[in-house]
Length: 226
Image 1: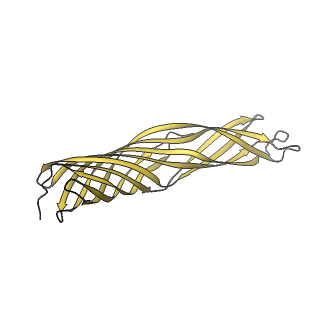
Image 2 (image 1 turned 60 degrees about the vertical axis):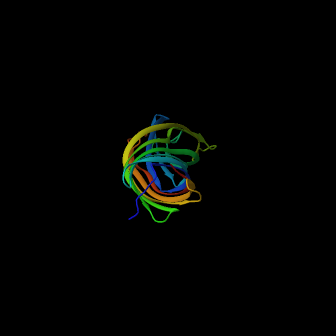
Image 3 (image 1 turned 135 degrees about the vertical axis):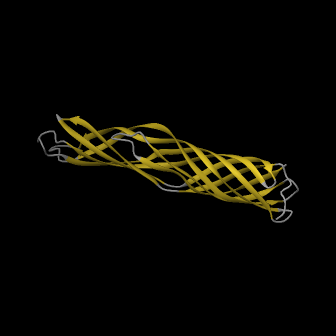
């Protein structure tokens, strides 16, 4: 095996994170002296991310590395409500509502042990892994607004929803492979695949549902060796 002769590296990447997240909320409110109940199902998928990382050689081909990733995706929420009737007790109506403009964000800090394998003078393959620390932001529904749709009030609509953003932290791990191609002695490009993930409990109406954080990440970007 060839020795890695550089002392440090830096990489800047853009990429795509694969992963689906879902959780549910339950809300209630008193309307016409009865209780209206709402079920909210949240869904969000993959999206783009920005990543910057670097490391310093500590022994032979082994480096200590640190990476920071910022990920954001659109989150949707489907609401189904059981809303009391204004004229008849015990005769609730069903209303539906959908929001598509909610957000899910993740900032990940990844500590890494990196083993660098020079394949040729221009190509390096790095294998890395370590713990990850996430700061997660998630939009949740805090209140819903029903509206009557004309007499005899057998139909009801949900016309609006108030939201807020909650934040939580999670600890997980990461593992992956990076391939670097040097165009000059110091600078080049590369690509990587990494899994980085954790699980976090989100404070939401009706409880604290658990959602997955992170996922499989594919990235490409600039590389520098020093």
